[in-house]
Image 1 (cartoon, rainbow, N blue to C red):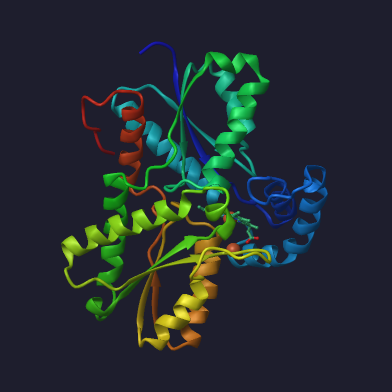
Image 2 (image 1 turned 60 degrees about the vertical axis):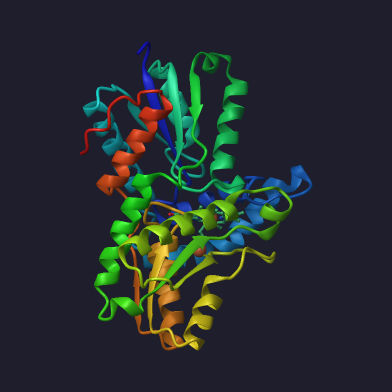
Length: 337
Ligand SMILES: C=CC1=C(C)c2cc3[nH]c(cc4nc(cc5[nH]c(cc1n2)c(C)c5CCC(=O)O)C(CCC(=O)O)=C4C)c(C)c3C=C
Ligand SMILES: [Fe+2]
Ligand SMILES: [Fe+2]
């Protein structure tokens, strides 16, 4: 292959220390793809107000998980592991991490990509399902960097939008779900509860975000695979967590759905975080602490969560294979880690 191949993993980023929380939130709320302030010149002043008002509660939450987000470390490990699988398959590519709202920022990654004289870049968002608010926002930021810098035009870009239907991703998820189901005393009675990160309803109804459809398809694929192994597992729910602000978000909301299931007599709940592939505050604090408390308070005492994929080998191999396929190298199956 001519030139040098790079792979850029996109992610959200998270504060590494409690002192970072305000600036991280300010970056997040300054993004018009995350909250749209109709008057553009008010975006930054309003972002600083919302960030200041949310910072204390957000800091409390980060304090509960050790004082910062583990996202950077996990994403850097994923990058290293994908790079190793690519190398083993004869592709001498370098894998970079570009975060939207914290270090290493996407801009920093692109600057390094330029210095490394990369000529072909595979852009791979670490969100299985596409949303305007996540992958969309990061891809747009990259487009803007390309428009602003003529030197970047020499780098060919291959952008992967979403990949929730990849067989390796599904297989790795099923592996984790099955292991957890078997750890319950009565595996047949386990209700599988998919908890996705929410978005405001108008993203789907007004802005055309495919997020909800991709999420529902993803759950269907996972349930089909689970039923192939265990014919009796029909019981599942998809709900949406982590809403912020006063507007309506996708429903059902996770905490309300847990209450409804308790009313139906469900006693065994296995939560599957589904919109994100790494541990972060929404799994470690919101599900493991907040939603566990909600479940306990309504009488669901057998409550567990499936771990995030992080560097699950089946998942890492699948992402490497996805990169190879996007480059047209499909002849050989990947040599696994
Ligand atoms: C697919 C995943 C995610 C979607 C969709 C998403 C949309 C979205 N998020 C906010 C507001 C906040 N998100 C925050 C943190 C955060 N968000 C995601 C993922 C998605 N967000 C993750 C993984 C994280 C945690 C990162 C980490 O620290 O590890 C936060 C800050 C935390 C807090 O204060 O609760 C906010 C705020 C909106 C408004 C939105 C859709 C429009
Ligand atoms: Fe979020
Ligand atoms: Fe949250």
